[in-house]
Image (cartoon, rainbow, N blue to C red; front, side, top):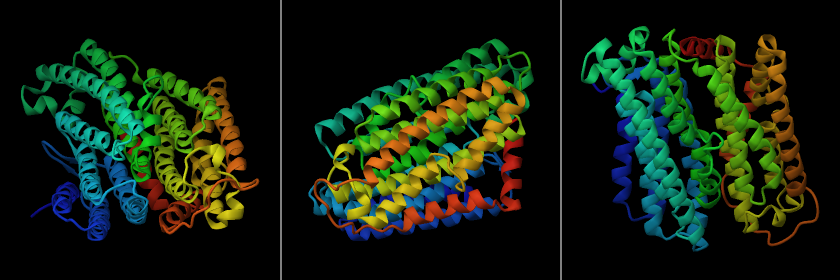
Length: 478
């Protein structure tokens, strides 16, 4: 019998093969939504199913959190994408042939990320991330403009360098594991390596983690390895921006955390948490200041993603049950909120015909419902109560303050700087005298409202069952 962890990979890839053969955009859009809905249902089945450890696949309390977020945001993005891409065809920015390719690649990208998430083999995990990277490179350049092609090439070069370094780090882990667990597949099986972590060569582990941190850190978007991210977000289709910020960065972080668990389990190896704390703080504070210099609305929120990924890496670097819980919660809240923001930004760009912040003014006058949703999403990502992002940021700061009060000042400072920049941009876009064109928005607001409702509900009340689930995942992180 096929298991749910197999179906969560097979369904997207099978759908991709079918979507390639469909010439009709409308049929492809409907099938894309149906496939994503089915994958979401399988993700829910996987959450409720028994945990599993095999040679090539693992389902535990840790990765199931990522799979659940992946399938949920994948579904809402497919729903948003149906109307959004239809508008792009009508405006002449995309041809029907490119849209058929887009739908197929969307499902292949979701399948690749799921491969990386459920892989127990560190080589297969690397393959899943590499495949997702190559697919998103093509998706970023979908519009075929000079700027889009340049962004795709920059993404390809920098991400390929990063993933190559991660590959070298993976080889070093394999070399370290051979004396302890044997040659071949066992030396690449994460669960076996983790069980024998204390017997692995600490010198090789230290070197491997540096390569893995730089390699996967490039995919996470940590400063100063972030140069690809703003261009990829600004030039690619908005649904891909939502997937990049809401999902792909998480998958790269997941891979890094798996290796962090391995290195931390060896008492003679370096402390990976300290390095992650430093890189997380650098990314957080750097991105917060860079928010003030952005002139493109999608670049603005790309730097916001760097800021929040830095905060997550900081929290996971601090370690401990509460900090890990706060990091996982913030990851979930950021994924929902940031993808919701990009949905709203997609509507704004189509309504105003531009992504330039200077040309987006007075949305409360021209598009009041869109202005309200966009304002709520920005306030949510800024960390204001009663949204869930406030709760996760509060947990991170209070946990840090309890352990090192002076250290807590740095993330608090970065968050305040970023908060000021986002409020400044929000005021300019929502209020003031409208400028430029004002087109009708035909796309669905349901994905934005669904994400905001979930983030608001999480900020008001988290069910005990959900808290217990996140606590078990946080304990696995150590």
